[in-house]
Image (tube, rainbow over all chains, first blue to last red; front, side, top):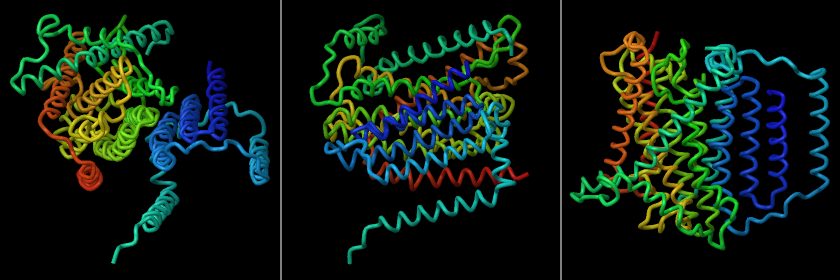
Length: 163
Length: 344
């Protein structure tokens, strides 16, 4: 049952991602991306990582993609038809590099992964404990970085004060 | 928990059927309640033609909607135009999965939780799904291919993102005190202790205001402000598709009322009863608990209607000001106060 569901969610994720990059209309691209996030969340549920699945939907599908959509709808209302997938040399180089790296990563795993990860990923309590004790310094450093990025965006996008 | 597969499937199916139908009946009768209450507040009679006191009005309305021509205007994006109404109903029904309706019931000697999925991440699941409900309205606005609809859709996405932040932060205080995200645990803690509305008054206030904004109810119904946007995102919709937007709105109202009851009003708690009393009463305790829970939900649904016919609509800049500059700092202050209060 779980194996079957894995292929359903995995297939859906791959299909939706392919449609994301090949759809002619950016709004549909965004929708397929939401579906892809949903399918990824499904795979996390199969791994008993309910927290990560929930956060995936909450943060990516629920917040980030809504913002994307918001921008897409505001910027190109009707002239939104794009050319779809194009094959430039740069794309091929990037895709090739990614495939090589992916191959190395899969090779490092040494065969199929059969065991599930421990409870750490599934339980909010344990995750919070490791975030706020063992990894507290990296965690705070990342949040400082994000804060700096947000401040930078605010400063850059501010209109010039009129004299 | 039983290991009998048939037993698990049976009880879960029964719960799903019971709870979803409960919500759908509420969603069908809310328009009648809304019209009756508004009539009462404005010294009118309200619907009184179909059945006793107009009680069959929802059925008449549904029949009318079904028999109307299901027209799709020529200038719309067909796929999304048809999907959008359904996408406003589905999230509301999905959230239902984690709401505990009553204390655990005894079936064939086994204890069964009166919640469809007693998730570890409980309330996070609620926020994840409710954050998806913005898509229905946004797509409806975009697919209608009409400037007023689009404005309504864009407004709703801005509004819902802004108020989701407040909604999420307002309940952080509860989890800091309860040290769990599981909704059944939060209720059992309240049954033996004090209702969260007394320990978290600021959180409750922020949550309730944000809940109004999340369900697009007056005074926050800017996505469909008829004085400026015709009818906002559902301008181009008719017949059953239009009715589905209404069903979605009322189902979402039920779900948020249920959340207010669970998070702040003690869920199935009755004053002066403890978990032990509920357990001693057996399945009668379940009935009492469920009635108590539904009473709280109805009271809050009435509050929804009451506010709608009392407070006028906000301007959009006022809405954003309230969300980001008033509610968000309030929610943060609440988190800090709760943290200091619960210092070990």
